[in-house]
Length: 299
Image 1 (tube, rainbow, N blue to C red):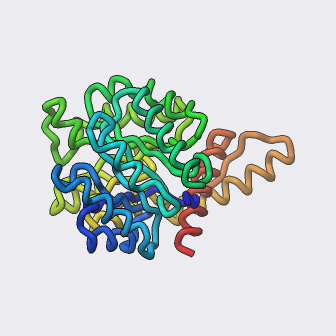
Image 2 (image 1 turned 60 degrees about the horizontal axis):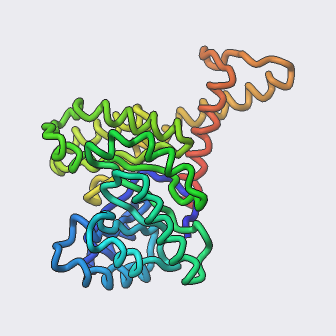
């Protein structure tokens, strides 16, 4: 699976609700996450695996991930055994705190891929880091993720719900208290050579303006997308993490003008009153690459 595409919105749905699990694959997110963890009662977890397998066989308009239970629970291994298959794009691993956990889960997925005739490394693995221990180890975890021979960890995700609970932080609408952690996610990801990270869920479902501001803030800080918990959150996330048309047009002009200048021996020019050299061109090329992935998905 794992067709290249944008990562602006990852929408959760409980894995043990067949109608909602089927719907989440159709409502416009870039990826759906069928949840076996927090959205499923402990007693219902084993039975939920069958519902998730059935949902993975349904028609879809996006990539399909499954959030398994945390590594240190009795459910993680059984979850992986149940859902690894040709219709799965990725696994979401919650509450990652130790590089050994990441290595073990990668090993499990790799063996299940081989056993079931799937391409090696074809199933994505996206860890969520959401505890004090996880954040303290974030740079080591990012380096360990980037060093996996399978190459299956492409990005990390931030989980502010468990994080604020773990630290006793008051989670406000302005989210100023999350800025240090968010900045560390972007820095650690870039330093390790991973993609930009995915930002946390937003739990105040009626606070539309605050959610839109949160998405905009995350995009400015360097996140590439958002974990979502309601279909109404998809459109604001997709918009916030998509380059505006004016920015795409300017990026096209920058790349074209610089190519012409570079052919003539120049490496610093002005485009529309903006100084342009190699770093600015690289940013413009990145914008165009994101826009191309979005256009390909829409097509």
